[in-house]
Structures are given as structure tokens and as C-alpha cells.
Length: 293
Image (cartoon, rainbow, N blue to C red; front, top):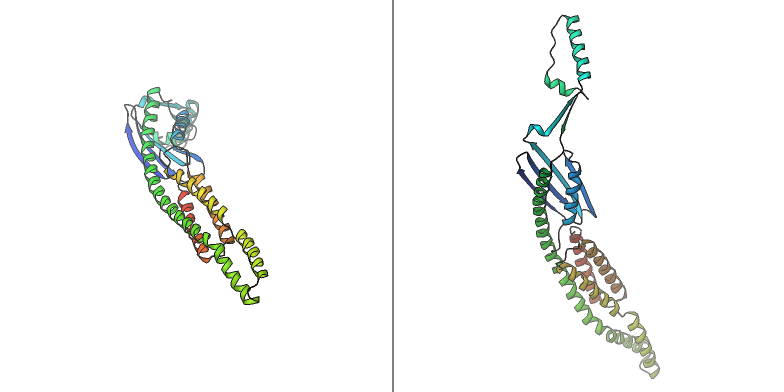
């Protein structure tokens, strides 16, 4: 399974001998798996659909709506409060006599009176539950395909950014190798300007170069940058099913932290520019991984 986006949508209609159902599934960004069902209450079926969904989607807000048409009238139970209806009819008859005017009571009005009529759909049969589950999965499969397609596009963009980060790290390594020599040249020039060349100055120069070289050494930061970069590349190219978005976001934060440390230690404007380039590329990655599962 490839890396996936968290956004997708599908809507399909299906018919069985007793039911026509329209299934709508929308997937949006969310830190966790967040299920939202809208439509006719379907009892235990909803719990079953949520479990099926979570087997295929690990992260995202999933908005599900089911719209039903029931073909078979026997699928419905109707309950009329006959005692209440009798009281209503007696009251109507009494008022009609008092006003000496015939009053009618329509079927439509019957359903508008609270608690008088309860229309309830019978429990789904085993075959109906199986029908709903299979059609839900068919719709969900389309959402997952859309999420994977979007995930492939995002992963391709992230790989381009990671490649640019890698190139910047390689350039920094080349410049970092020259940094001790550059420090020595600057110090030598400064000492010559101040007091000329002498054995004492040479000894002092060696000590100062050793100190500054150690202080400005960025080899550890470069090693950690390469390690984080390798981890990110493996996640983006992995075909395993585990969500990668959260881990990629964490790695991106670590890359930025190391780039900041590197820039604070560097005395080379070229290295500083490369560090800023790394931060820019990683910020682009962070924006994109917010949409990954």
C-alpha cells in the first residue's frame, strides 16, 4: 500500500429487492480517525460500517451519509395512539355540533400531531445488512483509490524537495571541509596586521585555529541531517500500509532544527545560504505532509 492523502470523495447508488440506497463518503484532513454519520438511524449497522472503514483508513475525518428508499411497504411498522386519536375525534365532533359546522380531519393532519403516529422502519434483515456493507465497501474503495492517487502526487513533490535538501547538504559538506583553512587564513592575516610574523604568533595561531575549527564544526549537524533525510526518503517510498504523515511532519521539524543549529555555527555565508535553502524546502514539505495519512 502506497502513501495516501487524507482527502477523497465518492457517491454511488445501489438497488436491492427491498432497498435503494445512495452512499456518500467524504474524507477530510484530521489528526486522528474521526467518524461522522448523517442520515436515517441504522443502529448496529453504523457501528459495523465504522469498523470496516477504520480497517482501510487510519487517519482523517470520514463523513458518511446514507439516503434510503424502501421498496417494500412491509418493511415499516406504524403505531397509532388510538386512545389519543379517539379523544381528538370526540373533541372535533363536539366542536362541530357547537358551531353547527362540519369539520374535517385529513390524514396529513394526523401525521402532524406529536406522539399520535410513530412510523418506524423494521430492523434490517441479514441479507439487507450484507447488501449495505458490501455497497459501502464498494464506495469506500473508490475513496481509497482517490486518496492513493493524491498521495502519489504529494509523494512525488516531497521527493523533489528531499532531493534539493540532499544536494544542499552535499554542497555544505564541500564548503565545510574548506572552513578550517579559511579560518586560518583570516586569523593569519589579522595577526600579521597586528604584530607581524613570529614563533609566538604561530603557536597562538595554531591554538586559535584549533579552537575556532572545533567551535564552528558542523559535521554532527550534517550527519543528523543526512540521517533524517534518509528516514524521510524511506517513508515516502515505502509501500507498507502504516500512515506516514505524522512521522514525516516530525522528521521535517528535526530537519529544520538541525538547519538552524548549522546556521548558528557557520562562519561561511555560503553555508548559511544553503541552510536557508534547506529550511525553505523543508517548510514546503511540512505543508504537504499535513494532507497525508
